[in-house]
Image (cartoon, rainbow, N blue to C red):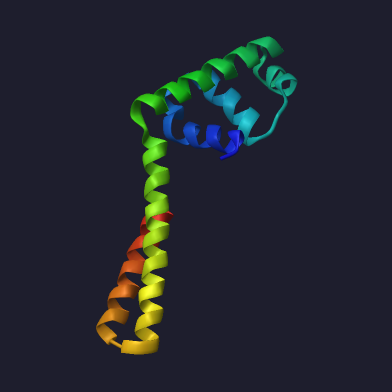
Length: 121
């Protein structure tokens, strides 16, 4: 995962645990792609102050993830749901070409629907 994506995801999970200024700096830097100078101007602090705030916030986010592991669990669940959907597709294809069971078709459709709902959350 690219660093920008990783920080954005960590921010989604743990951002509320940061100070408002840290949240703003990370949002500007990673999600709005502003430079340190632009953020400094917006926030009324020095460029070095912005950099320090971002570095402290990044360290806090990584520390929270190391302790809680919510992003890792989220990614693992996402991968599991993808695998479930893939397996259901294989079962459904097999059913359509060999068995033609309405019950299997209904159940594979139901499993796919549930997995897609969980992925959308």
